[in-house]
Image 1 (spheres, rainbow, N blue to C red):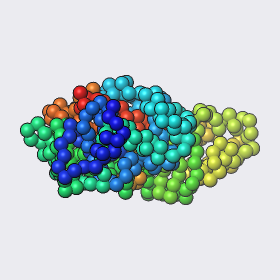
Image 2 (cartoon, helix red, strand yellow):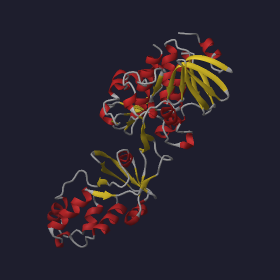
Image 3 (cartoon, helix red, strand yellow):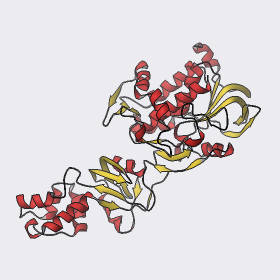
Image 4 (cartoon, rainbow, N blue to C red):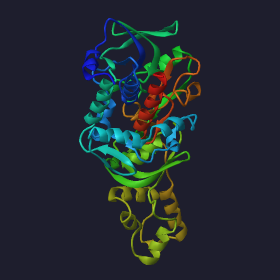
Length: 407
């Protein structure tokens, strides 16, 4: 491994520089790729138009970075090719990243559902990744935009912030369109189209959904949360749902949003631990209890009141036919909301879609028709569930490309 002193000398980009690999994007995937390639002996340039690397890492997990998930598996990722992620994920696992975290002495804890967070700050993860880049003598070009990219004579020639750089290998790690205030751009898709790679239409994912029309009254429940099962298509998630001043959010809804398409319904089971006989059983046990009162014993009071009003069931349970009580339970367990949209890329944690996996090698992340061109992380049509899965894809795809490009 090169000396730390040499690493410090090579951090700045000169007016015209030749490299083995240029990595576009100093996010999770880009930093991991650059570090791995640099430590294997490649001369690497890491480019980002932001002045600081890892901006999405810094805000993730409430500032503590949900850096991986112990339950990572290919079926927890969305892609036009559900098998594509298997190779990279199997070769760089959550335990591999955890070993790196432990080596740097970063304290961590498991929250729920296999989600791992820093005890301290997400800054520790960014600092760790940059230390890994320094160990690989990676040259940095931060705060500089990519102005042009050409491919000729087996070399990629770039103009970056008015300076020229070239390399035989180019890695697209510039992410998707989510959270533009942090600098997200469509650069990955522009480059993909420039090199004749197909792009699966990008759309917001892990994003709050908005309600309108007759459902606008649910906005009055802003701040109310309840554990539910939310479903979109065939995907079902049991976690908390949160009503907001614009519609629906919370982990269960964010998860379902990745599978939701405009015009479709999201189905919510407000009583996931009960069956369709629950009100009939309650009627037998407490016949004089009013329906609304019974429901308030099962759900947050404001939510119960709104749902009872929509169901239009009034009076004591004893006076309500079993058929109507079963119908109410059926509705509460399959309550269909039809969102009129989402809060868009501004609030989306990630992007579904991206550079089509059909044009990439699942082992190396290299473009099949453009030797030396790679795509990794959120730029690719692979999107994980909420809870650290997207970071694990960033680490795994970054390692896959870093090792392949430096071979």
